[in-house]
Amino acid sequence: MNATAAGPTTQTPRRAGWLLAILLPLGLVGLLRGAPMIDDRWENTAAHFWLVLATAVVCVVFAFAISESARRRRDGRLLLIGLAFAVSAGFLGLHALATPGVILAGKNAGFVLATPIGLVLAGAFAAASAVEYRLTASLRIVRHARLLEAIVICVLVAWAAVSIADVPPLRKPVTPNEVGGPLGAVAGVGVILYAFAAAAYFRIYRRRGDRLAFAVTLGFALLAEALVVVVVSLKTSWHLSWWEWHGLMLLGFISIAAAASREWHEERFSGLYLEETLRGRREVSVLFADLVGFTPFSEQRTPADVHAMLVAYFGRLAPLIQDEFGGEVAEFVGDQIFAVFNKAGDQPDHALRAAGAGLALQRTAAEIAAGQADWPSFRVGINTGEVLAGVVGERGHRIHGVFGDTVNLGARLEGQAPPGGVVIGEATFEQLPPGAVVETLPKLQVKGRAAPVTAYVLRALS
Image 1 (cartoon, rainbow, N blue to C red):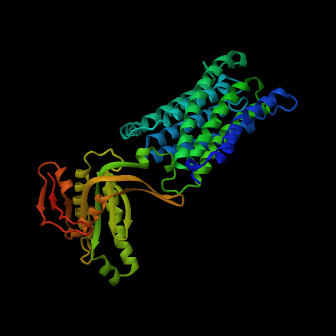
Image 2 (image 1 turned 90 degrees about the vertical axis):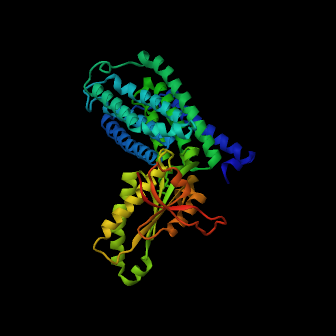
Image 3 (image 1 turned 180 degrees about the vertical axis):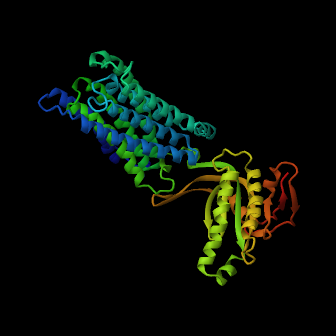
């Protein structure tokens, strides 16, 4: 049953379970501190160093994988989630590097301060990610992705250098009495940030019923609890109550990684997308390119010959569309290429890009087929208009595609193009700059349309 449809009977146990999950770790640390005979001391610096450092490295790699997916899909929320986990895991690694007696001969402030500072900074990213951004704001965040990542890396490297070099201000060891008050105040801010983020993602989970959104909710709740336990256990370093916050952070990371690993590899993080990414309206230009005479060619040649021909074509044409003109090659269907321009909403000149890509595709295809007289040639159709860009499918298979009459008409125009030619729709032509050389076609009667369609053969751009 979808979470939004659950009634009072199912909601009561669920709320009780949430309350238990939140209070249990805090109750455990309280129990350990109140019973010294249970709160044993386990000081193994080598084990601490390697276990915590390995955890941090794996989590940082996972965090940047999230950020890479955010850049691909142009989703600001996903980018900020990745940065939140990169910062928290990165400072956890700094805590490991400052383990006394491993790299550093003695204790310094970095061992105590790295984790709470990192958790609070990560909380700021987590809270920022919980906002439902509009498309323009999301694209602005993604445009600054490299800068944000560079800042995070510089902060981590600078902290590591100061801590490992054992120089001020981290050189001097700190006592719980010295930092307890300030860290408590900072932790309070962090808990508020995580609470805001967890509540927002829980609402997303209730609305969408996606387990990844629930995992992020749980992960942020666990990081908030870890922050509280860090401060509470300042006076019990190396005791079980102090080790607890390490476990809470690890569980927070594992919950998200485990949920993500069970999602379909395409659009693995779609449960966290902004609404604009999940199902937003865009004005796009679509390009269809299909080989004329592919079926007779396939009948007369061996499968190896057909494969070699397709590899030769697609191996150059797909990078041409993506790298030189910024289109997204959505799929190959047999001998057909389908590409979309402005799918993310960041290409106002999408019609010009698509038209340029169509002409360049035909020129390049002719170069590839030179000397291969029997190879089929492409016909290209381009259309411009509004679509719905979003995710379809279930957990077993998901794609992020474009849907609407604009796509259907683009496919029909491709069927009207001459071999080696590019046919564009009226809306595409209207968005091209002056000087485009076209030949007006007779009114087309296309399947599925009662009214005739205006189209043009594109010869050249200005």
